[in-house]
Length: 381
Ligand SMILES: *Cc1c(COP(=O)(O)O)cnc(C)c1O
Image 1 (cartoon, rainbow, N blue to C red):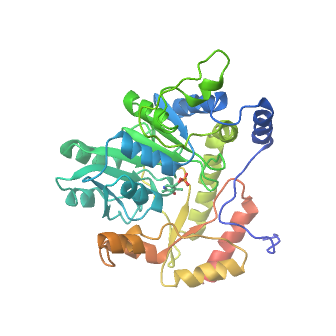
Image 2 (spheres, rainbow, N blue to C red; image 1 turned 45 degrees about the vertical axis):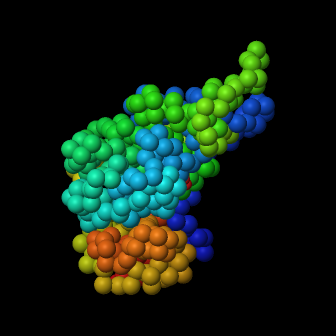
Image 3 (cartoon, helix red, strand yellow; image 1 turned 120 degrees about the horizontal axis):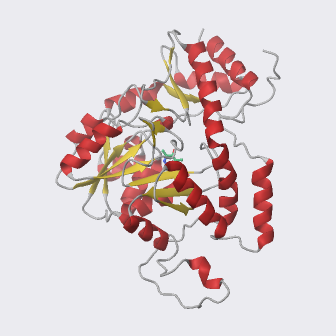
């Protein structure tokens, strides 16, 4: 294709427009940089977009996961079942509240947690299931909800990949009690760093709102407003992980563009699908019929060819890729502390051996997608 191959195509790149930049400048000039009116507006619009009552802006999805666990009173002596095939934040936060992470295997077609394997790992100590909508493809929410109901378990959703994804026409985030989103720069929309916790449960929302800022009795930012008292009380030993108005400035405009961004991601994913379908060396990502996929990632399995060499060869052609994820049960801390070992989760390990995520994002040009296709095909030929 007529494209300058000297230009590196990174694995991911955010798409920030003039509107975001103007809004950040407006915030900088306003004199209010921390949590304030723009965060409140972003939260309100985000809740409306997802179709939930409450949204609370935080400094990251990691913090959202932490506060979700605390809000549901999960801690010492409890077990939380989660996939090993996820980012470290999930298991790390479970450990940080004093609970035990119990890793379950994934379904090999969608790379999401396997409901049958969840059920096998339930014990008297199990209190919650943390599910991850890998790549933006929703988990088998119905089956997982049935299990949660049967054993009286809380579902916490890690929807870091799934802002805008739908399951049977309903947005991810509107199903279970508590869902956590990420606005890290590689994710479908970004606030630089940032996260959002959504819920229909007022108690959970109040807990998170309070504990994102020191456990203060009233919105911390309001204590400096004209006519308000300087007094506040600390009702719990909270954290400090609230979203700032600078982040919300980005979020307000990114949210408006989200559906368009997802449409581009779907368009590019179908170009990849069409090019790779039928290739013996490539297993393309599958999509269930009742799913609207946000395609945060386009992850393929490389067959009959070393995945690591494939990555090196693409890098030489100026194409960035990544591997999502290195299974957590194989990470040194989780092996040492909890005794996990190779062989514990066969599907996760088999998928990890072959998986690689190709560049896919709205800041990418169509010619770049075609260049990636050409290079993938020639590397594997
Ligand atoms: C990115 C990511 C997170 C963490 O999000 P942050 O906003 O960076 O804290 C959590 N879980 C998954 C699956 C992710 O991909």
